[in-house]
Image 1 (cartoon, rainbow, N blue to C red):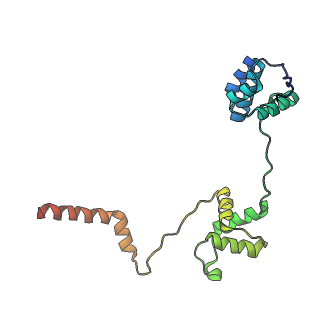
Image 2: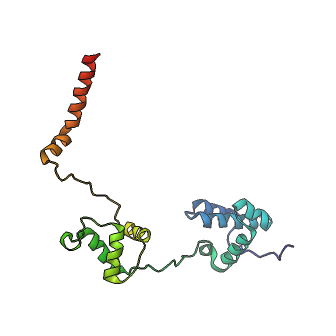
Image 3: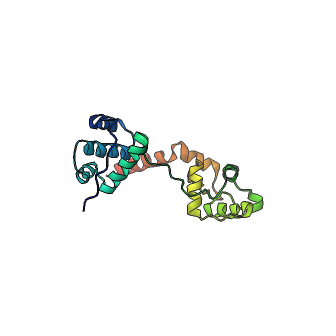
Length: 183
């Protein structure tokens, strides 16, 4: 059950299409160019498609687009995707909200969590987002996930400075000396 042969526009030779395919940055368009070049060389549609790593119907669709639009028709068309839940102004406001941090006296929060940000978005803009969805939005805004280090309430600044200046190294050296003397 083979269909009627589809004529291919012959304004470019098979060799020229292969040369263009080698230089093509878009791998899908490159594969379509190779498949059309194979078909121009006289291969069957099925064999030309198989060698380019596609189905015969995909090759047929590529030939139709190539005949109508030329090489531009071999590139993927842009996809619209889902409309963002937050508007540009709301995303800008969210970025400012994150950089300013929470109001400690009003909210009792010392740092934002995704759940807290979701609640704040609901209160400000009456929009509901799941924390996982908000995580993607926050990453697209250029923020990364960071955790605040906990500080013990009775820790002293001098002990922290001593530790950072190599207090730990001195203790390990003392331990190494103790081990050597005991052997």
